[in-house]
Amino acid sequence: GEEVAQTPKHLVRGEGQKAKLYCAPIKGHSYVFWYQQVLKNEFKFLISFQNENVFDETGMPKERFSAKCLPNSPCSLEIQATKLEDSAVYFCASSQSAGTVYNEQFFGPGTRLTVL
Amino acid sequence: KQEVTQIPAALSVPEGENLVLNCSFTDSAIYNLQWFRQDPGKGLTSLLLIQSSQREQTSGRLNASLDKSSGRSTLYIAASQPGDSATYLCAVLKDSSYKLIFGSGTRLLVRP
Image (tube, rainbow over all chains, first blue to last red; front, side, top):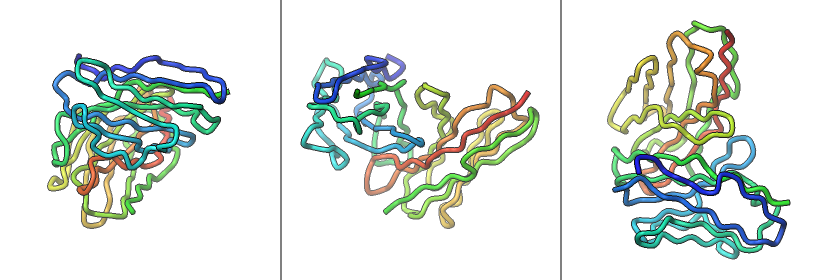
């Protein structure tokens, strides 16, 4: 598609439950990025993919967070055993290329996760 | 470690006024800088991208400048309108990584 699509828009989970978020990048974009926005507009990078390969996972809390980008499927971000501090808006972005001055990331509308 | 700072944190102006939003970054080794707009409860809309070799970019009433050596960028909004009310975020793309580093944003209110 022409826009980055994210589902669901809102997700509510009890502490300890699993949460799974989905992202469909813009058609033709090879790179996918996940960011977490917490209070006061703080954006934290989580993970990036080049097609189905993990590109950079330095921001991922590996114990409970995992992500995949499989061919012909939306990318997913999964949180096992959610904690209260996981409450945030999770944004997905995609770009046509990476590592150049032309690299522009386009963002989806986000998924608001609330952990009770 | 790259840090991005935006000043002011909030700004309220009457309609029609020209205004400047500021963004500074500590590490000049960047590929580019993007300005985004975020409406409450919404995603990010990319406004302008300035490549590291460029000095400015313009789109309609928006003009963004980049001084890489001093680690500064400004977003100039001409003839502001109530519809410009939003949070404006700047983000730099590091040249050793492909991830964006965001500032904390400037919340703009344009009063009718």
